[in-house]
Image 1 (cartoon, helix red, strand yellow):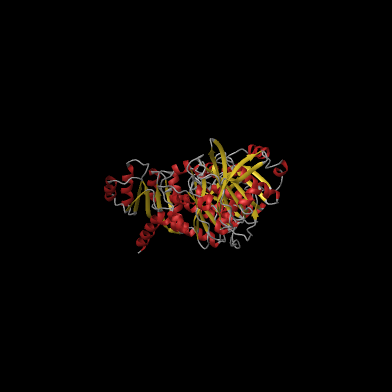
Image 2 (cartoon, chains in turn purple, orange; image 1 turned 120 degrees about the horizontal axis):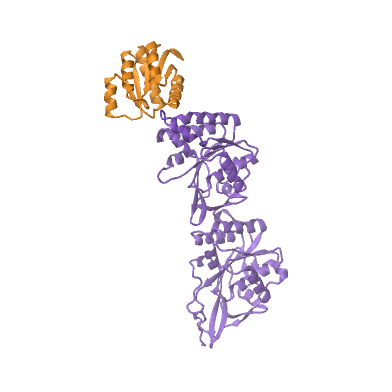
Amino acid sequence: MSDTSKKRLSTGIKGLDEILMGGFIPQRAYLVRGGPGTGKTTLGLHFLKAGVANNERVLFISLEENEQSIRANASKIGIDISGIEFLDISPTPDYFTKVQSYDIFSPAEVEREPITNEIIKTIERIKPTRVLIDPITQFRYLSSDVFHFRKQILSFLNFLKSNGCTVVFTSENFTNLSDSDLQFIADGIIELEFGEYGRNMMITKFRGSEFLGKSHSMKIIRQHGITVFPRLVPEDYSVEFKHDKVISGVKELDNILHGGIERGTVTFISGPSGVGKTTVGCHFIREGAKAGLRSVFYSFDEEIEITKRRCESIGIWSKDVINQDTLLIEKIEPLKYTGDEFAQKVRHEVENKGAKIVMIDSIAGYRLSIEGKDISSHLHALVKYLQRMGVVVLLSVETHNLTGEFRLTDYEISYLADNIIFLRYIEVDGMMSKAIGVLKKRLSDFEKGLYEFQITNKGIRIGKPLSNLKGILTGTPLSP
Amino acid sequence: MDVEKRLLIIGSNPNNQDMLDAFIKKIGYNTFRVDSLEALMDILIEKQGIKLALFDITGFDSRVWQCCRDINRLGIPLFLITSRLNDVIKKRCLNFGINTIFQKPLIMRELANTIHVFMRSQND
């Protein structure tokens, strides 16, 4: 990715900095908008904390929530706000009785001047480089009309910017009270949403800079605050690599594949439930790990202990293999991750731990377990990213039909496959058997035959080509 | 502050009176402040260089109209301040020679401009 982080101010949230190509541009004003509970104040606190960490002077101007309440809530989500200066101009308990006691001028007119003076004095005293105004919409009640509000806000923000401040201001976007005037004024807009599939963030404006578009998932985690998971854009990543081959360790299968599968390719292992897709994939994982290539197995369907025991029982993974640093086996719990979050997890494995083989078991499990909409595009992005990073990608793809009409996959994702290994149940003379074959291999030739396939207590055994049968793909082959 | 330009402010609500008093001083005039109709009579008898009266009638009884008449007879220009503005009040204002009527809440800029223009016209 291009490094434009110079002359940028960190937002205090790593994922958001990445989305903003390094952070905020200094001495500009950014609008954070969203409904109640979407994390606007928390985002602002991260921004101020990043300033404190950078030995900057920072100021929180609170117009709604009092300082005590902000401190208590920040502490609950693990944000230490020491070092942040507060200007608390939220209404005090006696405001109600005070306002009730006069009617000669509107409260807006009475309050505006003392508040403005207090802000100016505080800015001149503290000389902050970062200011959070939460929420700026409160100023609307201090203005006689929309025109004056816009003029006052513009003037206020210009005052802050000319005093060397970078400003984050929040707004509540009610349907009956538009904040479109604020959107025009702001140099950048961060939209926060708390929807059916969790929290999301989107940048809709960022003057003077590129940014990562689309919606990005985010979480507010206890003791950590906000974590943002930027949407994976495969085109932003690439490494140079050789298309070295990774073998399965099963001589016959490697022969069918003319020496194994190449790095930077996506291999579908397709077949119905229980036919042996995971077992085939685990052979590649084992051989990779043994060869010192970090290999990662994400199980979306099966508990890890069951997978391990099964692989041990058929001699694929011994305890020695399982305990190797080059092997990671992880169960992905249903609905724990969004597509962006899982992609971030995989990126960590690839970019920080050097993973070279990644297996997702299975696509059906991924689609059921990952939260959010547009699951196919998340999977597409992840697979393309892994390809560009030179990783061997193994995807077990379940077909619903045990026998009968041949289908590669029940999802519209077959275009992703560079290589396709398929497994089938077949009925021969009233006995159930299995067959394996390769349908496609993009980077080399392969054996076109169909082979008898068995899982024994010593792993996979592949027999001779089933050349004496025809119509194998129908599931009920006949002797010629 | 021009001490010669004295404005009389009359009202029953102490908080309103405080705010109006502070505002009038801030825009450059001296004030006489009166919080009751009884005290108003004493001030009017002395009539210490009052150039304009601002009378917030809210909270007073019907004697306010007699007071307005008295102020008018003394030749002191009068701005009336009211929370409600109806035809009855408008008619009475005309009868008692009231120069301007303001309905609360007042807009500070508007009030200041009106006073300034009026005071200038008085000087001319």
